[in-house]
Image (cartoon, rainbow, N blue to C red; front, side, top):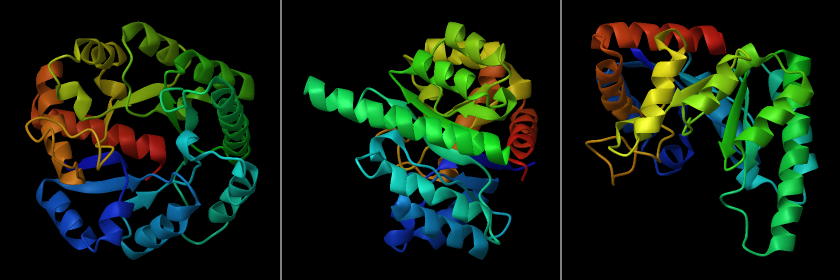
Length: 264
């Protein structure tokens, strides 16, 4: 059983002419599929074309990342539904959500941008509810606010994943009691990530999904280098140890969970 990287960003590799090598290394490391995650209008068409050109191996999503939200957010969000009408459809809406960590220090400017983030998130949640599709949530410094907005939107929580889950067991309980889930990056391999490992165990192997968030958040032993989908193998091997199962059992469970969640 191969692995599925449920959250990666292939745009930088594609634009540097490195994609063929990246995909070859991923397959050599045991990956059978990956989901490349849309963040703004600059990558949606690229990702659709990559999914078209690499059927079965590359899947894609479309969404406006909270750190990509600006004054023109509404015009960008209006374009999202067009991708769902095309021949090569996305597998989820996102990534979308709220991010307080990257807000500017100026209080008035931060308040304005965060209001735009909330409005863009609400619109994308509404679209996901309309389409009945999965939602990939980005939450940084705004976990409770994201949960509150998803509750208010009436989205089916069984179709919600908080990517790069970096909270603890208490926050995971808020997701699981609603039917939602979290996916885990290479951060789980870091020595200081005890709470994140506890959250993964609290969620259980039957809901576990793993991701690289490449080119970011590189797992050990490659921390400090740019991440890539092939490095998911290290996260999978580490997680097998956390859960006390074989690598094969971990791969089978996470791949089954990913295929069920994204419908791939």
